[in-house]
Length: 133
Image (cartoon, rainbow, N blue to C red; front, side, top):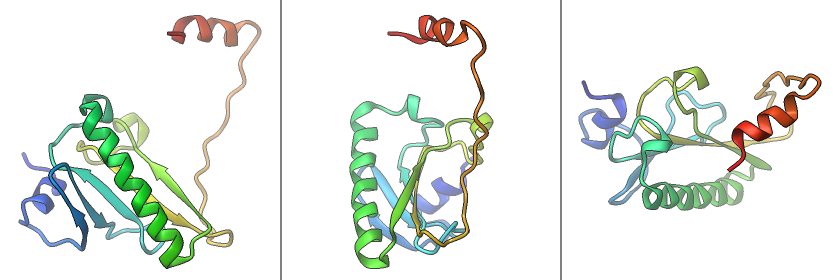
């Protein structure tokens, strides 16, 4: 079954496209956190960024950088959030790799709040040993 992003890429449903190339399409999010919120969508339906080849992911990040620069210069935003929700546990709603570039302003009233945890006793060292490469 096609995702909404595949339908947008194939021009089956309309979208406000900001950029297209061989690797990705950039659209305005129709449910923006702030106006100008853009999505960089890989043309191939990789479910997560770990499944995307490095050269394609690198290209998408270069495009994200361009979108960020445009948002800052044109929209006069003071910052951006660059977000990849990777799998349903991380709130990924559409299983198709995409990068959010969200313009942010000091007084926009938006938050991205994640509760921080505290390591107990030797847990920090244990996690280091598990994850070190």
